[in-house]
Image (cartoon, rainbow, N blue to C red; front, side):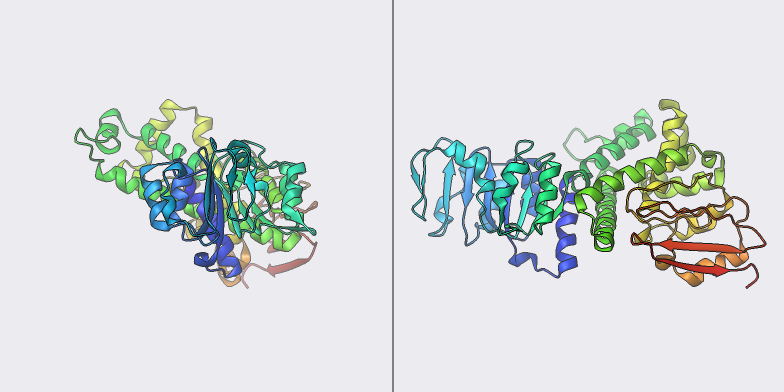
Length: 441
């Protein structure tokens, strides 16, 4: 599951830059014996030129044999089991127990363990580096300089699958040197999402239903519901990763702020808005609550169990505050990711019915998000005409606030019959474009 989100960031880079992944040379730490490493091998189509794992280092500038890599990945075997007869003349393998190994270049490796531990810092030419394993802080600010030559990073693209593989200051150094880098906090969220939705399913079913639909049978066969649920969870993971990738890419392009910083600010923005939403009266709005939860909860659970039953069972096992978090978190996520236009038409109908008591804030993060008459929908993506038409027929007057943040303080506009509806969209550079309409127009 973690690999699916990591993979979306890799594919996002290819999509944005128009790259053919079959032509990409790739280095990976964390080998075919690990969960993340094996799945990355099975899902990718790049030309692997180097893999580092617990057993040692495997290199072939001409590309490692894909069939052999697939065999290792499916059997969860280390590179020590790789058939070296499939290496080209430039290829080699150095195991941790090896000493005095002569490489095709003539270089002598005195100690296999030291060679393995520092291989990723050799500055070899690779298009893509995906750390899927390795020690924390394997690249720090000092060692990051080994990957910078003449002011330019030797590795153009890095997607950090392994937790804490690169320190934050090293990430910023590499980004400054031109590397397109996405950090672990964004890239590997898939595993957390999967675990959360698995727990949600266990809380939603009663004991009998859980055994029937979520537990492998005695003959080793998983239930049909379980197989379908896995597919839905996978789809959710990929969609969430794609949304966050697009948000970070868009904001970096607009502001020039390092992606590693944007990733942290994005998480902070989601958490902050989540907390603010929990302090509103949103939970008391039954119509809105059901609308948001129907979008937040997996469709298969809703179909099999029903929303009211899920809420009843979950609320008995968790605090009401935790259940409220289930409602506010997706709303916060989709507000921050507003540039992707993921809020549904149902939200457009439901959200103007409530009032968000959001105060004007000094948003230090350059994450551009927009609340329109208490919706959370961005004008350009949902359609200006549709927004204006909707407001014309169902105006939301009162304290419906528009809060737009991107690098500085912004304001709150009250919607009143006298002024109609003012909608603002600010960029990180302070440009503003306003769309105005009056009731009846």
